[in-house]
Length: 395
Image (cartoon, rainbow, N blue to C red; front, side, top):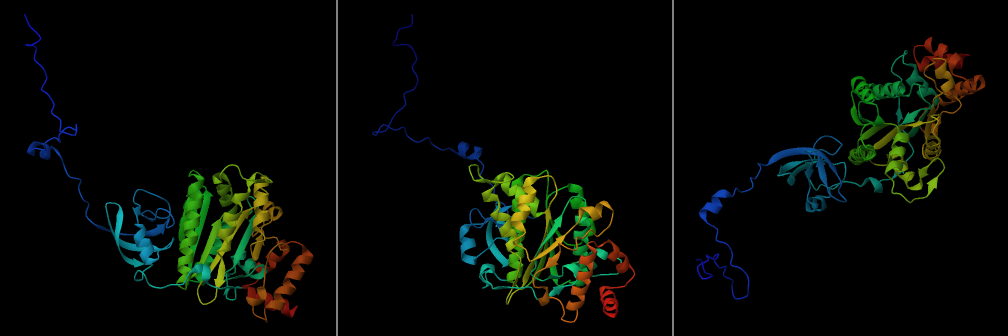
């Protein structure tokens, strides 16, 4: 018979004087079962810097967040004065930047001006868009709403008025006539096939966020593109940015605005109005530096009260406006430009003094006609705008 004294008892667990259990012994067998975390080999990286005010990263795949992003220690941001939109080349290890070789192709830490401190002035150097007698859209822009380096322009477009074709013509004209300019095209909330067409049609830097991506991505790519443009301007470059469209960007800001704000007419949160204005406001001609030209499409007559009210908020910010006409586009007349609603502020600083009176005479005649349609036939019969104005002078 088993007695309590003969029942086997578990081995007693000794405790130290303070009541804690002694640490387990680590044997060679334990060590053999453990594997140290492997250390990745350092790799060279190059990309755009974003998020310097919070968690700075170098984008590894363009302008959108992705798995190849590399985090940047705040000490490196502070020591080298890094800014959003900088192109950083350096060495990374285990997903973290460990050293910097160059910033925007220059030695890191090199002194440079701050975009916000530079002095904005009126555009004084003209961007000529006329490329050939057959491309009427750019010829019309040169005549009705000339553009200069540092212009802040709106292309006011109802649906199916030829906005995309007009933007492509402007982009190709910039590439042909002004190769010194860095051209950026930002497509916001766009159809994927439209993005593909733009990439195949225009040999420029295309930055896109298609409609199937979240609104935060639309905002991220646009803001980073503007910051990249600012860094180039600080270095003395002339940048031209086409945005399609500022209206869809405004919608994205409205969707991501925190709840509880004051709502304006059309369902616009008051906090969603200023950010797209800030994007447009980056366009300027800078004294002693480069220039940033922004031409942004603004959608109207879409049936959305929000779109109309967004345009009302934006139109006071521009110094150039090109209006497209739905009535002309319905007649299949292109470019469908509204002659009475298009124009440029202080165009006298852009246009030669001998040419300016002829342009005014031409516009007066067009205003009296009220439409561009008869004038387009006259344009087709001339080889250039200069020939057209010369014939007008003789008349």
